[in-house]
Length: 155
Image (cartoon, rainbow, N blue to C red):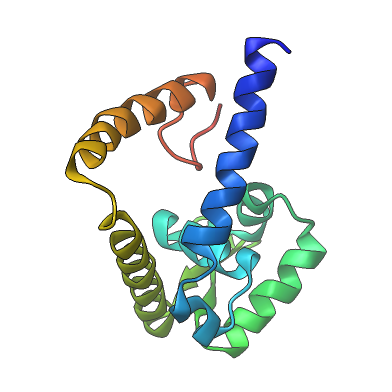
């Protein structure tokens, strides 16, 4: 097995572990009954401020038809609003509502608390190692992605 294949395999195991033990158990997600796409969409809209359906569909890697159903549910729940684009009346922009912003903040706080609880069990020496390694890992992955700082930048 090549070094690259080993890193890919190790990364897949790590991502699965993180999803199972760090992301999934967050009680606030369960309470809100959000699916992964729903949380991801809220997160992307919050980061961007507003976006078109096309931009959001591309970033979520779903069809516009799938996204329409998701956004319709989010509008019905009062989490997002559709607004005409100020520069191009043909476009509709999606923005978080006040309720959506509040929910996004609650999601982030819950996730952060879940991570804090899990990481608090790690000995200080290993936390120090993580603190040193994580920025480097982030930089390596960012460079592998053409230096993109965030998901909205063009490659």
